[in-house]
Image 1: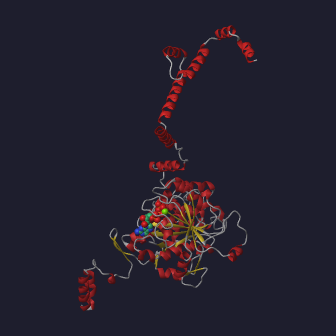
Image 2: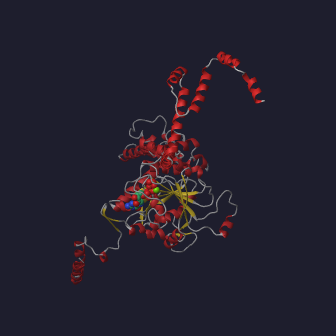
Image 3: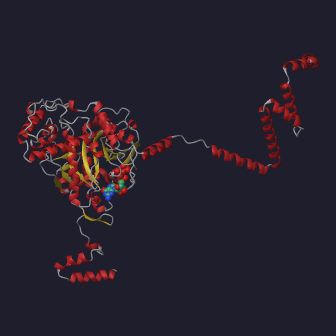
Length: 588
Ligand SMILES: Nc1nc2c(ncn2[C@@H]2O[C@H](COP(=O)(O)OP(=O)(O)OP(=O)(O)O)[C@@H](O)[C@H]2O)c(=O)[nH]1
Ligand SMILES: [Mg+2]
């Protein structure tokens, strides 16, 4: 084989340069190592040969009318640097942060209320459907092989508790002193930040996990951000949007990462499609709030850190590290407009985008028939408040929101066809007025925070979307409860031990054991007889002829006879005898 290869090599070198690529393509299957292309090419027998796109993220625009932009790794990294090392190359600094101090497993807890108190170490949680690659993500960031830090499995539902992993070195004494106040009931920080691997939702998940996640996102003080992993091949599901809605209600900094990008069959086109779906869903969620306080990263990251091909996995590693470091607040961004939402008191919205905003669907219902005069002019309708029926209710489910979005699109299509353009302009104007009259615009931001009842509804929706109520999950619940029970007493093993001991004694002292057994059996017999009714016992007494144990038996019999005697008979017998007096005399 090597001989033929060397021959081919000689022939190849003798060939004119233009012909070489043609020849190389012809024996690509038996391609020697030195021919391997330097471009990222995933060759897997299972997924076919897919050219891995050189894209680190998709920049999602603020307005629907703009296009999604691809960002190469170089473009993504050159505008950021670590706050602790400004001006230094980002890739190197990130590698140092994640690997110089080996990452550690800190602790795991299955109940939110049992988590350790933490107010100082920033926590970033990894969320996503089961089997999306959350645990693989942790291992890859720490540069550890599969299962070395977090357990990974092909089967869904491997991670069942909230797992804390510590990254980066412990703060120095000076840094701790600079932080000021004391740590009350809290351990001293041992890492720069914690990465929290959560149980997955969706297939093979349990209701408690959903509740724990919802509690964690809403109540944990230390959580600084959440990274939501979405399978790039499968695309976002309803449960993902429910979670995003929950994150929006909790106003938690959110980043989205498409994982398993190496598995997407049509490369960049497929990735772009998934990204568009995610974007659509987020717009629908954003449409229901007007305050714009939910800071979600407009870079939708593309990763494949758990890919079998190590070249592909490594190529996306810095992207994943950057995403997490940004959420933990360790990165200084020099990107233009990165904090645009924060500078404004409310959400940014273009006039073109107003057609997609909530409330328009109720108006567009009249658009189809321009001859029908609305009883009240649209622009005179009171500004839609949060409680107005024209807006999707704060407690509406994601399905409702989607339905509303479809209705908006159909309304738009009709308008494009030329129906009711005047009415639409009026409605847009009305909606613009309503939009600028919202409490968020007039500075009352808190009013847009969901009330406890709304939050409860959101959490319930999220938990329901987990589809955890299947009989299989009930069985798993039962299994878990059984696991928690204390171990059974070793009844059976004790019995066996006794039997073994008896056999040993029999072997050592055969005569004694026989005699003891006979006594034992006899006693049992007597006990049984005692328990029997009197008549049956009398019959047996008649049959009784005496045994080897006269003393015990006679005593028993005498006793029995006394008991069987009537009271008067006993008194008569006692009087006939000498009684106590005679006994006393004898003693004297
Ligand atoms: N091809 C490919 N496979 C991946 C990637 N990331 C993870 N996997 C595989 O996906 C499977 C599930 O990975 P896990 O990390 O256990 O997923 P998880 O989200 O932690 O799953 P649960 O703990 O069950 O919620 C494993 O077989 C991984 O090898 C990736 O980027 N590319
Ligand atoms: Mg896991």
